[in-house]
Length: 346
Ligand SMILES: NC(=O)c1ccc[n+]([C@@H]2O[C@H](COP(=O)([O-])OP(=O)(O)OC[C@H]3O[C@@H](n4cnc5c(N)ncnc54)[C@H](O)[C@@H]3O)[C@@H](O)[C@H]2O)c1
Image 1 (tube, protein in one colour):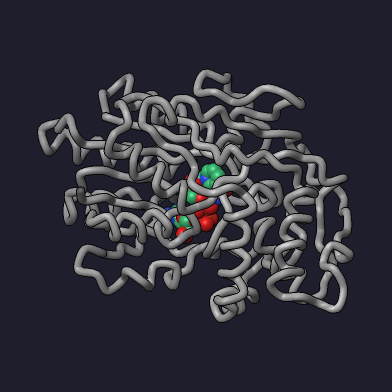
Image 2: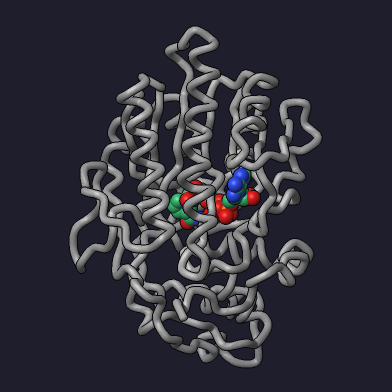
């Protein structure tokens, strides 16, 4: 397939690009190269004749039309987004423009291309979204594809809005869409403002390991390469108009997650004291959702996908990757906001 992947210089998008090229697809990577992007993430495939890069902002409709006309993709995998909840609290405007207006532009550019091609049935517009659109769970229960939307941060509200647009473009115009909502990803090439790389890098630097509140917030952790496999399966085999929840079947509290990371670091890069002694609790993020958990039954039973690693195994691979790739993360550390607490809402 010829895939147009948006946000392919980011964390998850780059995993999709690398996997898609390995699987024999052609890939056009469309990315505006914001602070969160890093072209080194796709350096391993950039010389492939199956790879092309378009430096384009999804807020620029005319540029999108040009990309569709030039490359005539068989499918779109739309991952480009502003993705950091803390940044959405400090400055929601970019989230509205990229996640909502940008998705609208992508839908219109894709629709115009699809209509121009004679509405091929096998065209796909795959929208990648988050479990955060479902809001927050109590101690029990899981999000299914039928769970009502209840977003609670500017980030999740913008993603929820984009999901609604994608559904509407399917119902109203017949655009062949598929949608996925996934849980918290972690793994190699994760930008060092998110919890897992923050903890690894602060631990190695001998700095306090910041945990919001009392660390009891629960997330379902999904290894990014498992996620990329699931996304490539959905874009090829997913039923048109359907959404699929993707989870790692690995629920952990933030405190458990950080303790696990500390234990792995104690083994792989022993320090003078156990790393867990650096844990420090900081004022909670406003509106911090208590628990997310995914019911992955649909993607498991209909498409036969299951995560391949436990969170312990995935975290071990991740820690080893950060230990082996210091040049990658050092180069990102002076970018705006990295290493600084964001999202305090004044
Ligand atoms: N990381 C997670 O745990 C997670 C969980 C659920 C869903 N998601 C969703 O998956 C997608 C990818 O997330 P990620 O963690 O890889 O994000 P990321 O922040 O690492 O990467 C986003 C990419 O999109 C690009 N981008 C941003 N604005 C753009 C614009 N206006 N035009 C073109 N490109 C633009 C950036 O340059 C970057 O390369 C997002 O849609 C996000 O909402 C992420």
